[in-house]
Image 1 (cartoon, helix red, strand yellow):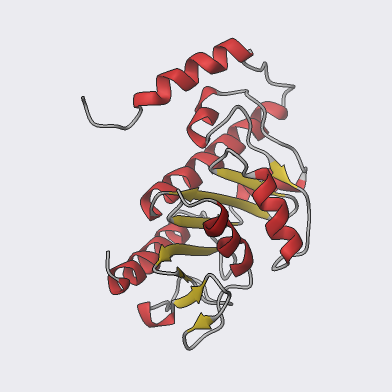
Image 2: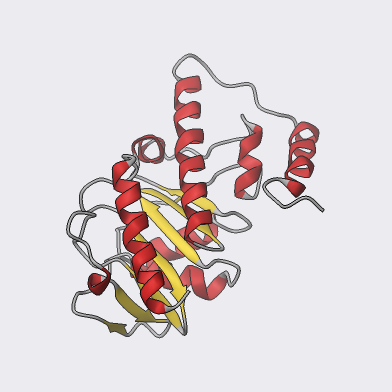
Length: 213
């Protein structure tokens, strides 16, 4: 996509996340890799009234270009793009179930095979750090090692994918798994899959969502 199309896609995803209740008010931020940096939603903006001209470009050096300041969370977007070249888009939300679980500072263990879609047998919760800081970015990178998503303690969640559509899909999966895990915890400790059972599920995902050979 060219820059204008990517800006339009960011605006569309922002509005879709808001419409589905996955992002609230001005919380959360979304970005897509572009050129020598990335396009990101501006600081203090929600879905309402957001236009393509409001989107900010941030170079990997940290220099921002646009009429608004970039999201206060731009640091972890920059660092994830720098460290994980396979990712082309990042979604950060304060969705209800994921944020509730993050406030418990709990990882999601292998209670359900759909965790394999996110890259491993757990969804880690990054250690707490103040929003917008390098410490938060460092903690998020550690929690996302070999993963496509993580929780942020007392904060929210991050999901990343090859493009915005994939990052959006993983965001929905994180929220769904968080809600299922919270419901299971409300009546007891879920029975976890064994290492062998989870490995079998991971093998099944090798062809998941891919064209027929």
